[in-house]
Length: 173
Image (tube, rainbow, N blue to C red; front, side, top):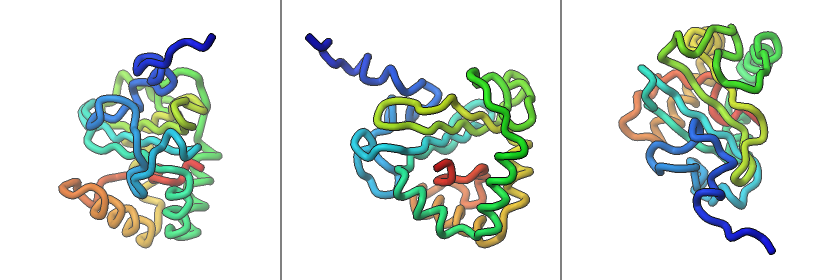
């Protein structure tokens, strides 16, 4: 006999770091297409913290992420891939920046990224400190930065369009 599914064990697969502040639990819908993430397969969650408080959060299904990525310049996509390949150091615990190794306890501004499928985290969380985020953002083309600004303006009224979204929403897959 299968155990009864409750909200408590249903949410166990997505760590609290990736829960929606606004929804008070795991994200339920894609920010772009508004479809139910539980049935769409792969999706990316990204949360930006300033002074250890969430100022931006999004969940994007794989299809919408791929569409968004196609809008970005090929130079920026190559830059992001190169930055990830050259600087990323995988670990199981999200206790430091995965790009420079700086301890998370020593910085207040950072981005948390997770690759999810339905109600499970596929890979360990990725942490990027503000310094590494700014370094990557500075290497992106004007076209890509404009697309990021349009994305924020279109989906998050009131959030500054120049908010740093490195590594960049929708590019994890």
